[in-house]
Length: 620
Image (cartoon, rainbow, N blue to C red):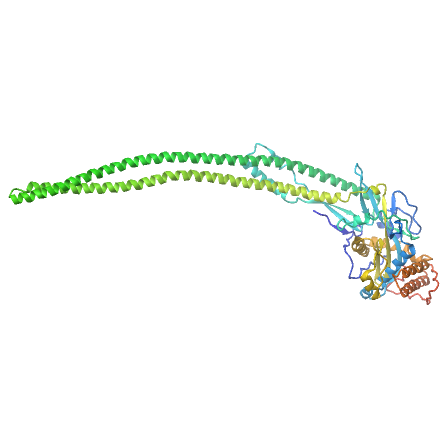
């Protein structure tokens, strides 16, 4: 079964839901009640590996890699960072445009103030796996995402071992298969391993992040901030050890299940062959029994025909004799009657002739009665012969029916055995498939990274802007960028309607649709991450640099010359940040930045403090 990926919440707290914030205002994070230093003492478990937030980090070391934010290729094919003034102008325009957007102003019912804009670095820890395989796991040190892995408890294999006994009959083997199958056909529970800091593989955000590892560059901002990790390195080593132990468990289970499956499949094949042989033997036995029955019936029919013929001949002989008597008696009657008439005519005594006639008539009647009785007996003999023959023939049908029933029972048993054995093997295959899927999901986070073999930390660049208003704090995330290749019709229409088309866009679709909205969602829900990023954004704020307005003016001028913004927009954005610098200087929170030449700004007095919100640039 696949684990779930979700943005991580504060340690021991709730979780933030992933997803974009397109079409709705971003949620506001509550203003922190304590400084980052105080909060860090409570929840931070590892100090930044690089320099402090108020000074440039030390030089690049072999075990750390800092990635570039906006890399471009020149005419010679060399890759270098976008000039800092253009990058700064692009980021500040995007932050100011977001602040001014109608959607945010209508949803918030107030106008936010940009509190700080800074270049921050997100730590990705490269934890290498020991052993012959040069693999490593990449952890997001801030723990925005969580990855949950499952280990399905393996059923005991003790119930299968009796099935391997070759001495079991097919019937006993079928009964034991049916007893064991339910154990492998259901899940017996699962262990869960939850890991903070794994970027999603689906969507493939992790691979998009890794694809940027070749764009290495030192921070351009003079005060880049490096986010701390939630845990010490030992914690990630221990998590990696647990993952390795789980992989060993998966491998052991898969090996045991595979071996048992192979042995069981061989045993089932033998049993199937034996059942098939029994069926063929029973089929031959039925054929032989039928042939024997047919032979016995032929003999019985021959005997019945002989007995029937003898009885028929006897009856026919009786009829023949009776018919002879009738013939002689009828002749005797006619002769006696003729002699009697002659005697009367001659006036002699006719009595003897009359007595002869009577005797002959009596003989005729007796003979006719015998003939009738013989004929009825013949009919009875025929009926009895038919019944005897049918009864004899039915013996063959009975033998054939018994053989067919025996074959049918054996065929049904064979089908039941095949189905039960198939179900058991399928259940074991399901256990193997589930473990393979779970193992592959876990193993998918062990990546062959020869280019990062000696690297321990990859610093992933982000630009972040903190916007503050009466209702709280909102943070905007700018992921690594690339130069926009073409303006196109959409850009032309956007400029026609008064919008801004910037020369940079997120480097990959995953950065735009997954990384940025999920980070902003996590910042609105995770107090630890929100406090850490706010404090680092303020500490590394580019708006407090003494020459920020000069660099901004240079960058805006270059964007105007390239046609990305109009001259009016150039002046408008420069005036907005100049006024903001004066307000911050007047409030005493920052050093006043010099106003660039050619920019006229009216003096701005600091707004009176409100009871419902802190002055801009301060923390409660």
